[in-house]
Image (cartoon, rainbow, N blue to C red; front, top):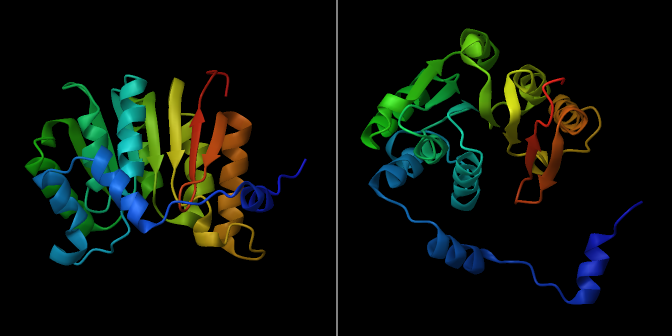
Length: 226
């Protein structure tokens, strides 16, 4: 069955949120402090790309981790640590956030920001290719939650590796799952991998793709048989 959401929304007179509405709701629901501000400004202060998760999506991860009582969380793609701060703050004092980051400079900035947020004792930043990092920490699983926001061509393999490491009831979350509007492009290796990611998650987990600006996949492991 096909849904023509655009036509339905037009007939219903639905008005999508514009930038002013999003800014207002962010200010209403999201409270930043110095640590979060510093991580969010890393593009200005440390020369990193301004591609971190938006405030609402980052706090959603914080809420999800808290809702499942997460103690061990893996983040693939940490950048300056903005989302890492949100995730680590959802963990108990004896919890651990494993941050896998390819770029040494970004990893250094993330460590600094996590330390400044008082989260150095519950976070571990691992530098290098994510698949190598996953092999390094595999014995410390199972993990309660995995968040993927890294190279888009790697998503399918990240899903295959991390689903096996999730505990029952654990969550897998991936950002940019619309691939900046290129998800259905033929012949694009990143699009092929991202479609495979959707299929891997949908097959192995109870899942959905939330229509955030670039799509946020959320999957829950309901059986250790996967």
